[in-house]
Length: 255
Image (cartoon, rainbow, N blue to C red):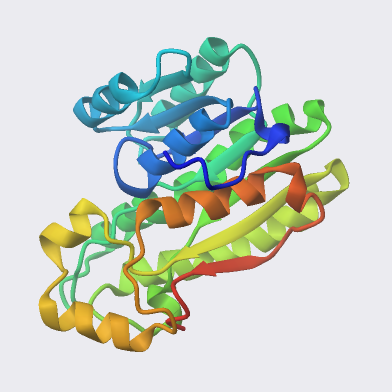
């Protein structure tokens, strides 16, 4: 990890929870917090990738993993409870990162599929907030960072339930920011652009699509996971102590 980027003293030894932390953007967020000296716990269903991530971190890093299917709120709550024990206390920073942007048409969506996609992409964000808010109140403050997506802002097609869920993150975050603000708990939204994770490269990045992306962005360079992680660090740190109920796009100026 490059030493050219900021170190935030306020993040040292802070207890952080990251959902969907085994791969992609989530894994980069876990790594970046570990580099800051934070105590990081993450949830995921991908045990193999989670173990590989923890194995490649430096031995002095305090990083703990719990397997949990976030569609199951009981599993989610149990996983968070175990992480609080292994991290030595309540959560002070929450990064609601977990999501899955599977493509689907309007006609193929059933009520069951709608509910399952909302559970994957939205519902767990609320219940994670519910599970850690009292920790943050007891600590005298905290930071919640919820991941959305520029896909709905750009009116992307081919995944209407995903974009509906990601747009709903705005209302959830702004409401939580108002309700928890008196306790010095901040809540903000990050909109990743087209981040070149391995999943995106494997499934959807073609030469033609990549050329359109580059032409649409003000800065044509590809975006990668650390570009998002560094925004998350700033929103978690005391440097942004009076920033709340706001939206941050990391997209190279595509929108």
